[in-house]
Image 1 (cartoon, chains in turn green, red):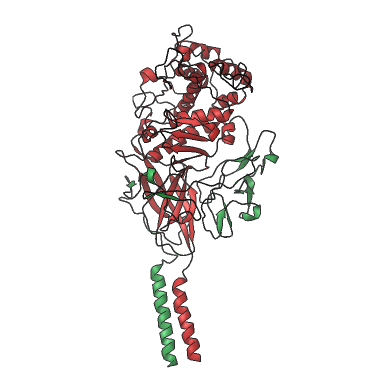
Image 2 (cartoon, rainbow over the protein chains, first blue to last red):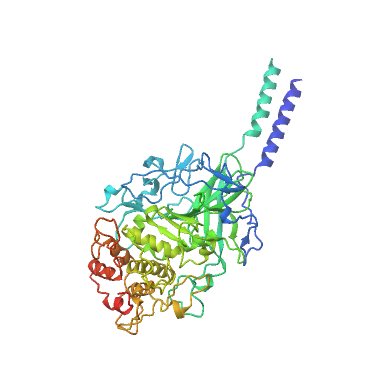
Amino acid sequence: MRRLWVAAGLGALVLVGAVTYLRSEPPTSPPRPPDRATATGNTEKVLPVAPSAELTAPRRGFIRGGEGVEESGRHRAPQPRYRPRDPREWQGMLVDVSYQVVCKDFCGLALACVAGVCGACTSDTDCGRHESCVLDHCLDTSRVSCRSYRDCGSGSVCMLSGLSPDPRGNAELRSFCSSEGAASP
Amino acid sequence: MKRAYLSLTLLVLLVLLPCTAFAASGYVSGTLKFWNKQGNYCPNTRNCTGATYPQSQYDNAQPVKEVQVQVLDNTWAVLGEGTSDTSGNFKIYWYRSTLPPSGMILWKARQKDSRWQIVSASTGGIYVNWTGTFTLINGTTYSNPQNVGTFVWGSSASPNHVANLYDGAWRQWNYALSGSGHLSANMTNVTIRAFDNTTCPSSCSRGWFNDILIDSPQAALTPQGRIMHEMGHFAVYVAKPYNPAMGYDYPNQCRYCGTWGPTTQEWQSAAFEEGIASFFATAAMYSAANPNPTDCLSAGYCELWWNNIETSTGWGSCSAGEDRWPLSHERYLWDVYDSVVDGNYSDTISVPFWYFISSLLNYPTGTNDQQHDEPWNASYSAIDDYDGRSSGDFYYNFYGRFGIDTAYQVVSNCPW
């Protein structure tokens, strides 16, 4: 009888394992080719499902705890809600906190992964190795010229150069004191 | 008893195992484009030296540039975020505690650094565009991402107006306004409300509310006279906040009553204000080296014969009322900016864009002559000089800031 139970248990394990395998793809599976008409030349794809921008926005539930409004079957995104920053500091690149992105240890937009959620950093320890927290964002420490308006002269603020298109978003991100004249390159 | 434990263990395993999925992550790359139907391009028939928007970019798919992009799962939860580059390319890391059944790409009508965003005029919600769903592949890497190809929003027959509007705003910021350190530090989180045709006569800029109103989807296809011009107004306000007088309709000369045209006669405060906003738009469309920049309100290209900004009437040849044309003020400012030498007068001055912002910034505070609120009386209870804050005042303040005399430019173009 015991053998029968063990066999049944093993069978169940195999079955569950097979189902789990079929429901997922192994991490080592190679990327699939893009779904497009041709590999070269006119590869642009006009998506019939891409909605008109005037009506667009995520469905309710897209923004957790957000303020999504649904009108007449149309879906619109909530109004952005920014994390406040000391009004004496530069007010650019405020972090939108109207939604959340779950993370394990990596975030885009030069944000910090804190308690499993991407968001503004508040200290260097929120950022990765060789990164520093400046104005809610994680910068490569070598690119930090200032951290606050206190580091700049009168009438000047410490500001950020802007996100770069790499996945982390900070490959070219740097801080510097603002000037009246030509914009800093 | 052993059987009971064994049974219980198996039962627990059977219940728990299907729920125990592995965390999944990877990289997705692709390209975002929109069908560009904006007018005001530089036509092939013209000398387009230094034009930032040549006809080759018109009526075809163009990149959605420097926009915020998200990877979503099929429940619309955000799995990762990034930005597109100036070619519309993106590469984003995504993560989920379990393998998602499918994913999609979404982009917000928000500049990557949140310089501005386009929202619904009625609800305030930001506009977004998304793709169809695709299978997200777990385990893809930075060097070997899952490429989901190129997506295009809109078509020639049915352009995506928000995408076109976004591109016009991007051009204004990228090719002109971003050149000013003062604007880079102070022009942030601007809300562009689309579409609202009731608050303003057409479109308008409200620096004091940090927003811009665009009246109609069609306005998205006339960038130079709408979003770029309004961003020009916005920049003037951000340079040094002031109290607009907006003296439209010079007495007995009202042609477009309550509003204006390039060659309508306005009070100087309105003529200069519209002229400098248009100049900022033109400076985004053409570099200083272009010999025939144009400016108009059209979904096609601007005709040279009546929209030429480089033409100047010349010293002593101004027609009656030409000093009140917004076009005259724009031409003056363009001649201070451009590096093309006019043939009919000594035109050797060419300064970077930021000089104009710094000049406005350095207007003395107050309501006296040449001060930033000159049209107003001392108590700000009424406007007592609709001709205040004119090109003449700019001339003095520009000279005061940089020591450069633009007398030839201002006199030859007739705004003063």
